[in-house]
Image (cartoon, rainbow, N blue to C red; front, side):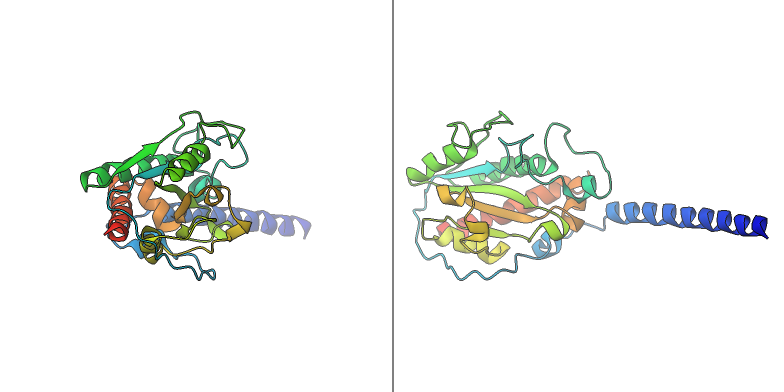
Length: 255
């Protein structure tokens, strides 16, 4: 009787193990399976932020306004604010895109370069800044994103920092976080109309917006967005498509 019970238990364990393995590999296969690339912003980035935000950008800007694009977390690797690792790394135990930085920063940098390249081609007065030092402890160090962005904004420039939001319950979605001590302008309104809008006082007022630096959350680093970025066949198309959408929004705000 005992032997029969033991055999049944072993068989059940084996069956459970096989089902577990099948489910795990099916989940990974589903994660990486990509259908043909579709240039649909909402389909790619997922839902926008669903928080109460009543601001409207009405302030006009000059057509040749200087624009600075920053890559979020470029100076805070190894610190508390290094950015999300993304669903692929955290949930599916995949390798990071670059072991020296978070996956979010990897994509922030790629998108930053693409936005500036396309923006210049389309006539924007646009540039980027990269501290290149990935661990700067003091946020007020003159080499940080925040310090350079703050000075750029003081001189009348438009500064926006690119981010990807956390996956799952840790993230909120795509959208623009406007400056904290400054009325939003028409570029802010154009970007928010396309990507969504966060309240001005999101999380009590973040460090960048308090320095007149906008934050654009492209979307949660998960699902279709992350799949399209990680898949070598759709990566460049995705980066170029997102960059064009952002540049389009800036141009609409300027014009």
